[in-house]
Image (cartoon, rainbow, N blue to C red; front, side, top):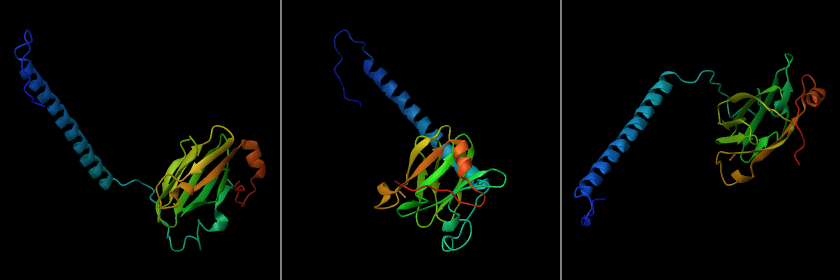
Amino acid sequence: MSTMVPIAPGAEPDSHATAIAAERRWAWVVVAIMALLVAMMVFTGLHWSAMPPSRVETVDVKTLHLKGEFVESNLGTSVGADGKVTVRLVGQQYSFQPQCIVVPAGIPVTFRGTSTDTIHGFVVGRTNANTMLIPAFVSTFTTTFPKAGEQLMPCHEYCGTGHEAMWARVQVLPAAEFMAKAKPGERLSCVPR
Ligand code: CUA
């Protein structure tokens, strides 16, 4: 940084001092950026520990395949009496259950998912349907798929040696076609190809 360079004839005599001043200004900028980042970490740490996210839902990993919301027969897409569309899914090393998910286009869909073993995650194609699946917690979000078509749904949290082979398919059907298939009390899914 401070290599002494002989002053070239005709150069500003204090160019070395100018360089040092510039270095010093930049050092202060870096210090300010680091101080800002540390302040943000402290603030968010205190803020979130004082105000944890609401609606934290837990589930017992040991019994989730035996009883409750995430038994195998309850996984897949359901349409409630109120018309609400809900997808329930489970991630496990190294697959999603169900392997093929059916959703309607243009209608809000609520995902509810969890994991039986380690942290998984998924994203549906290039949509904003994207979450982590964490053992003992229920992840939930609601989104609307704008257009029909088939999307890939890979696991996006490294979960072990089979991680890259862990994915499902999502069939987004036109709303009318979806509603024609959906029967009250039934769970929809599709056959993976
Ligand atoms: Cu499951 Cu990566």
